[in-house]
Length: 71
View 1 (tube, rainbow, N blue to C red):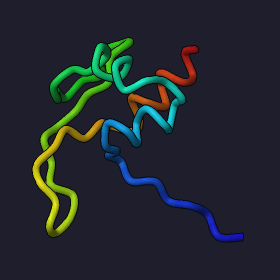
View 2: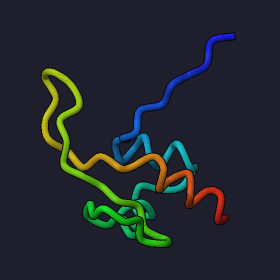
View 3: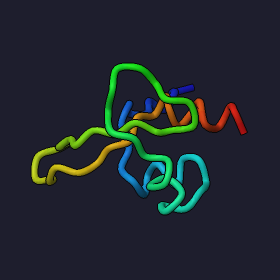
């Protein structure tokens, strides 16, 4: 069986869908990138993930997963 590989970075809507919350909820928990995780926060960077895309906030999947585990 083929395993789905999720990128380390998701868009705002992708992040909200990934953990089943609103985009506003993600926005309230957003924290600009720093090396260490901040409990209860989701770190983001401004990234351009593909050709023809613009620089946008992308949210760090391991922080989203930690949020799910804590719930």
